[in-house]
Length: 343
Image (cartoon, rainbow, N blue to C red; front, top):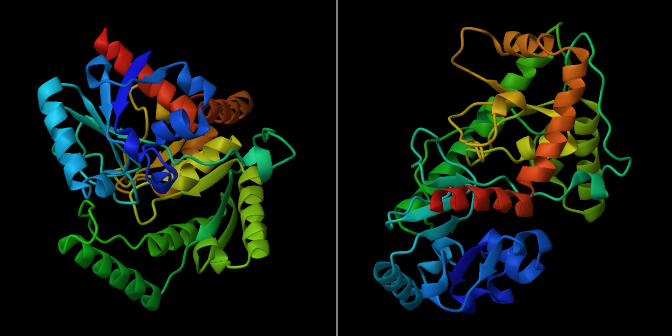
């Protein structure tokens, strides 16, 4: 068992949305699986790891608590776990720190960064009540997508302006995030999807929307758009996934949870648990720099799977999400890695 120490003053309803995800399972949810591997202790000398209780960007504003933490680290020489929330995430330079974040650029991230999956609810508990089923292999790959993807100069300018405004906030310290170059995610996504939809070798079921969640405001419309989203994913063995504002794709994890095969556009992203998961066995990662077209890369991947392997990868992806990418199971995998380092 790993013994954890944190400032419990921040483990309250007031900070519920900012709390380190592992602490959420320990304190708020009291998840039985997690509690088999982690224990909160009262004294820092008893712990294996010190955890910053809430998102880094929020905690450093608590000036006295932050200074106390730095002093504690200096005296006790314990490793620190830090949670950096949001689309961008933030790189801190505190010694002996492991940072947990959703995304970032693999070529720029330090080795002590843990990429977290997007922690989503199981689609089969609410949206796909028919239960998990696999799809048989067809001659032509069936690829789905439902989501925000729009072309046009006006859209480009809107995204550029939004990026500029956010970058100004970063420069003037209104938000604490890493700098990242402009990336017109919805436009690039639309460009690739339109091109794939014109292929005679692919069966594409794409629904391109001009707004996130189809711009839905009313609860009934949100439910309808969510149902449409998951039905499309369930009915197609492949789903096209690419990054959004941050350099990660929530859709990637939703596809795995449904037990389907992600086609992920590589944008220098780092995937979770790369030391223990061979991601090439679970998804197709498209290389934009390859001499092969996206269509050729997809067809090569599809044709290399026989009927049994096609079924097996769907089953494997569903099991992967359940056993390693749900929040509680993810932190069990993290436990195993840290326990191995201690030994």
